[in-house]
Every structure is written in structure tokens, then in C-alpha cells.
Image 1 (cartoon, rainbow, N blue to C red):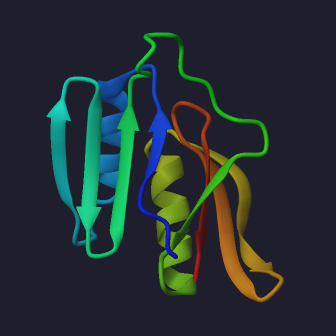
Image 2: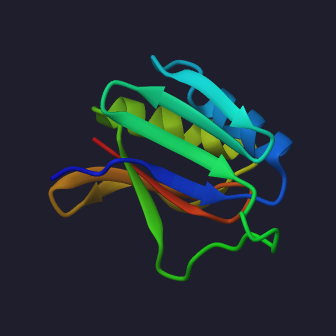
Image 3: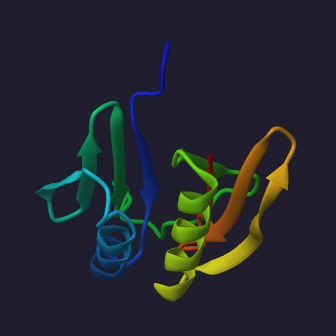
Length: 118
């Protein structure tokens, strides 16, 4: 079994879409927006989306929830971490070795926690 897709809630679709457009710009991903409330970035074995909550309530980040992106190398971990912060994200852990992986942590504009690892 493998993960099918990940969706993070947002309270500002425009800001979230711009953040992830720029964060993913150097990757081979296509952007697809099937509606005003959801935007996907799709690639081979990759599907990620941001969405306005279906129930029209406020989006909130989960306590203990984190989305991990395998980015392939320590250099790419550093690049993605730096880029996310430049785009308005917040540092949750600078790039470095943690256990067997080289990783870094950030919060996106909606306070969702992301991990980039090699």
C-alpha cells in the first residue's frame, strides 16, 4: 500500500496557492484546480492539495500532524527549507541529521507542519 494523496486545509486559497506554487516551482509538478475551493499539485506518484474546508468552517492545523516530503538530497532539504521561510513560512527545525535522515521542518502560512527529508 502507498499513500494516495494529502490535502491540507487553508483559510486563504490565494495565499496558500501562491505559497505552494512557488515552493514547488522547480519540481516537475502540474497544478490543477478543479474548483474554487481546492488546488492540486500532481506528479508521478505525487498528489498534494490545499482546500477550503468542505463544511465552510475555519481550517486549522492538527496538533501532532505533519506532512513529510522526500526531496532526495540534503541540498534539496536546505533549498526547500530556505524557500519556504522566504515565502512566509516559519522555521520549526533547521536542516540537520535526525536519526538516519537529513531533514528540516517548517510551518506553512496556515500553520501546517511540513518536513523535508533526503
